[in-house]
Length: 309
Image (tube, rainbow, N blue to C red):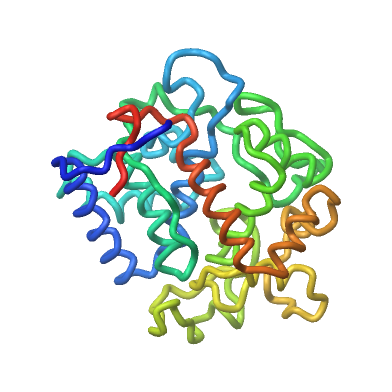
């Protein structure tokens, strides 16, 4: 895409209305992390090697709102995120679900103190469950009982005995590189893992048990207790994921999963993990580019050049 529309068309105005509604939902619920997960799990099904008519390759097409995709194991709990955003679609039907999901993710990042992402809109929605992606395209954080990460399902095998090998199979399939893998992993600074969804982490920790959490705007955050976080302030987007991971003195109740630790253990990943540990500005710059790229995977835009608001 060489240029984008940025006018006062009805859709542009409706997108701004949607943004306002999403900001209000984020302010009221502090549910930004689950919106990021929803958008990523929708776009993260993309396979750059699949040939055929759109939307056969998957991607950010809002197919995640349909069964069976929303019922895939990796998507446990995401039906709640879809429900939270349903009022936006009901109020502003001209804005696609795909745009709403990706907008909610980017606004969550920015309002949590993260970088502004150069988003474009105008995504066309998948229209039926027949356009859902097969299960197995999303990454695993830990190995299964057989010692392997990933599996033979999905559009291509992501199976590997190492977390770094598995991550590369997943993200290279999307057309993403090592820098983008590490940058996107840094979003774990924001949010929690839940035992009843991913099977990972604790029921709660000293950081997630209802203890005081602050937001980027300086307000105290109301949140539903539970889960395990990667960072102490899990509703603020910063580079603390990268400063915590290599810190042997970090609180043991903070998550350090195999897919996290490999970012500093693997030489190809470590150059970026160390860079982002040492400079939040560098992390934000790389993250914003990677997030934008992920948000556009597999998309068909109308108008073709997309819309900026």
